[in-house]
Length: 327
Length: 260
Image 1: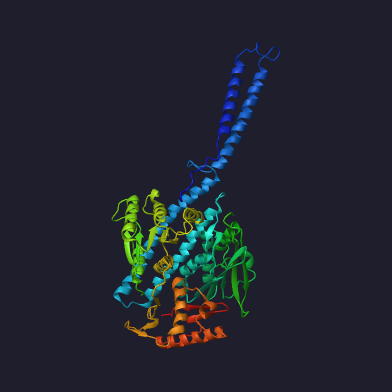
Image 2: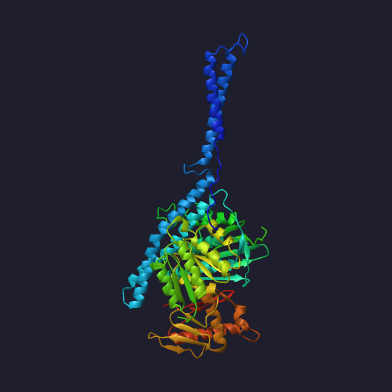
């Protein structure tokens, strides 16, 4: 089941130990050679020097091997927690992040829980409170999807930077994934006076071989962006042919200016950059989404028609292989 | 809301927390009966695991909501997945909705899913999801379409009586006599799609099944307009192009509960 694999030993310092041993042995022979008349071993005129030279050579070579071996081992080790190798460093980061997630999640759940409790109490007592109270409660609850996405983005970033993170494909119903995203964002959309719809062609879409979590993560980022920067109507469509399926997220917003488009998928870029405004997002969502799309053998592209054109809109199109059980 | 006879078992070490209480309240508002196995009654995560299996044997729930993490210790982190495995082995058709900590990452969920049978009706949802989202997901997992669907706070579709009812401020239900027969079937089709997944567009051909004639598309347009006029009159509000039943270009129609 879902347990972390044991840390792998990927950098062993055996070479360094061998080098140290060789250097110490050479040093010992060098010192001993100064005091022993070894004429029986080396005839005149060089009874001692050859042994000294050999000892000095073994010290030099031994030290070089020791330093080289140590550097190779420590370069791979990267931490002092009994783990070794970059992979294990990533896994350690992942483990620590999970603890962090849990610890951060507890107060967040309490805040949201109390917020929902307040709504329950207001509904049960029928107390007539100011509309401002309801708006404030809405505002608190609206933060939940953003918080969820932010945490997920951080988790996926760590995962993407793990060198041997698996790329697995299993049967996935893309329409169920899209339906889940729409469920998640519908409340937020209504609060903002926006509207979300989705459909698939064919209606009975069937299965593809992909990764539901990755797919959900990409579409969630696109939906979140559309709600944040797009227009009042957001439509998510799922279509397919024999080899590829597409998920398109379209919004009827003012479009993305031409000079923004080259930067959209750049890590850390947000529209506020260069305008001395407060950043409203981390600028990681589209970068992560495109990286994930590539990882699963697909693409993520954008096309946009900018206002004042009457048909202004933006479409993010995710294309992924339908895959097969053997892939 | 819609009456139900189903029951949901909730297995969560934080079952008394406000966030889980809100989910229970929402499910009960929708007519589900809920039963809880939590840490309060049972000491360790393992005890909870066995108590949950007993509760499943006793009450045979229609669905289970299960937390991935059944305790604060590191060993408890995936105890819920152990329980899930047992449930899937014993009752492979029992729908289970797993509460996770946020997304749990791409790798984690892949591992968890790949350990399960493909057909097992298991879904993952993070614990910060709204109670509405949890209830929606449970509905879809359990799968059965209810006889009665509440659309927003003022409209109820009674499938058995094939009638649409509109509620006034006092909760008095008044039938809408014009929305019967084919008009009711079209509205029910739209309501069921909305109930299963809000925002889902019903394609033209699915709605045109209820109509006859050469130009069923035009006929559908007329019927939709008639439904909107009748419902608008009953609700006491004018329903515009973007209200209640909304056309999606070249595709179909979808239901949008009237805004309060």
